[in-house]
Amino acid sequence: MNHPELQAKTFLLLLVLVTVAFAYILMPYFGAIFWGAVLAILFTPFHRTISRKMGTHRPVLAALTTLAICLVVVIFPMILIAISLAQEGTAVYQKVASREIDVSVVLQNVFNALPSWAHNIMARFGMDNIATLQSRLSDAAMQGSKFVATNVLAIGMNAFDFVVSSFVMLYLLFFLLKDGAPLAARIQRAIPLSNENKQLLFDKFTTVIKATVKGNFLVAGAQGALGGLAFWVLGVQGALLWAVVMAFFSLLPAVGAAIVWAPVAVYFLITGAVWKGVALIAFGVIVIGLVDNILRPILVGKDIKMPDYLVLISTIGGMAIFGLNGFVIGPVVAALFIAMWDIFSAHKNNLAHA
Image (cartoon, rainbow, N blue to C red; front, side):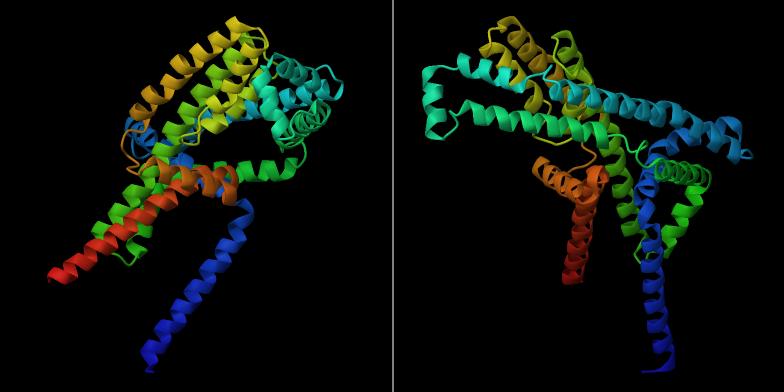
């Protein structure tokens, strides 16, 4: 091995080690760094408009203005929703614990309203023991509401980490808005690929993030808000809590908010509240369902260019590994996976025809 080759391999080894060490150092605040980068990508077009109006000689003021707008439009509302959700979860937990919300009564009403053939089916599967089902559902309801009450808002439990993570996210967001373009160009130059392939990967990365966050989050928020409003009008306990649950399921393709409102509508029907059940079904199908069909193509369009089953699998897998961050990371990794294999296939075909 000659001396220049040894130096090159040693440098590459050191480069990998330093990169891994740097990533390890940043891991405690991975979520803050990730969402700082995501918000920077989303607000960069808006920041460019502000920069043009203020003039290129005032980059700090333009970045601060964009940051302030991001706080008002995105971050503050999310904090308020989290606080309200924690309060709602606590209230539901207290009502279940004090038997003000009695799951056993609800279950008994449903069981009594079922036809005889349904009772026979339940008996075959050993589900006709109402006392056991009542106990299990009551425990599950208490545990679920307790989890929301104690874990949805981490500020009270670990305020220091929350403050530090928020500071890291906002600090990074400011500098990415201010110096994002030169930094992106520098990263592109460092990647050992052709300019065409680098541009393709960067475009795919930013496009999927924008489509996933902008489109899916807005659609999920709209469906959750409409579902929560319907529950509130119909007198369902914990309307805000269920709104957030519906918004969460709306993030998943092929699942949707119907997994929450449909059982409630069925409960209304079999317990005699027919008009509530019919109204909820009509509202769910016509209003909540059409939100996905109308808003998603407008906000997302065909930008992701992935089949629904791949989006679903990558989203669920990403959330299983990275939590809420995986909702964005999963589809991004899947899109980059497809793009990389497309580049490889094209390169292989070019070599075959050369």
